[in-house]
Image (cartoon, rainbow, N blue to C red; front, side):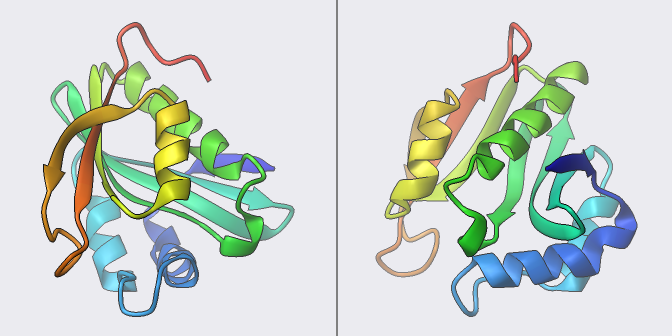
Length: 151
């Protein structure tokens, strides 16, 4: 597996991966990714196995904090360490840029993602009721990166 930094030209690929990884109607389009990747402070990594892109993480840094905006791994490639490798790579980049804390939202009913984030040191920082629609709450998670994350 190869992990590399995201480029603005990756927007179509990010949209395709996001659509393949999320339930119908929840994925973001190419235009959304083009805007996000172009934002000041955007940080992201893409994983590929051979020539096949299998996942990505996109975050945004603001001062000494960051938020993970999007994270996707193809369903058929999950539970193979790809998500953890992507998360670690992204956290390492953010720590190298002086980020001290990283936030994210995760669906309260997404046991797999919650386990991944918990194993990576994220802890609960709050609850956002109905964040993903009626009856689908989001947990707000945070992780300190000081001292810098070791991948």
